[in-house]
Amino acid sequence: GGDDHCIGADRAHAPTVGYRTFAVDMSLTRTLFFVSTLFALSAVVASGAGVPIDSGNVEEKVVRSPDVWLVEFQSPRCGSCQEMAPVWNEFASRNGKYVRLGQVSIDTDEGMELAQSFGIIEHGIPAIWAYDLVGAVEPTKIWADFETTSVDHLESLVWSRYAKPEKGFLLAKPGAKASRVDDA
Image 1 (cartoon, rainbow, N blue to C red):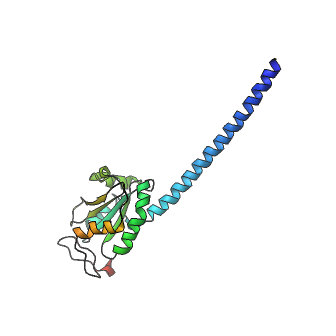
Image 2: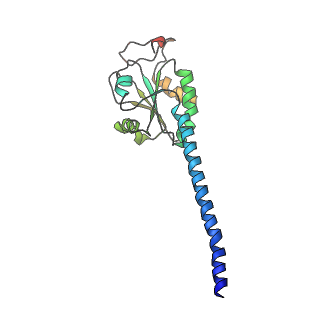
Image 3: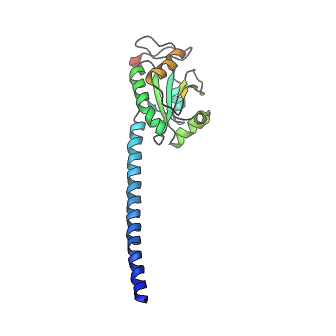
């Protein structure tokens, strides 16, 4: 009886070891797949339209600029941001000749610092904010929602708030001289 017990224990144990090995291998495979997918998605979202903006360059590039900047706040790990990426990119292709575009990734310390500085992060991401006053560091919310919007809706939100500039010029902040698109 004792030998049978040992044999049975060994047989019962062998599949467990095999299962655990298999589970560890699958766990590692899933982890590697997740990490590679995350990098691929971050490349897609991060390569979206707009100049990369964060707390280190917002003053120089955006606040001091005479031009209105529309800035998308997003994260490559955010599903809604991934859904919004093609909408933002299409908006940029249609409207980049009229307004400067930036993009903030909250996955960086500097991006998160900027998003937290005026409570932007409290409104959620993805979000589009306008830096539309000369010297003002506090932006104006254009759109923020967990549900993806359409390019047409985003355009209506922007161009109902601001007068679309003449062809060849960028949207200027009040009191500032409009920049020519060629100077952009």
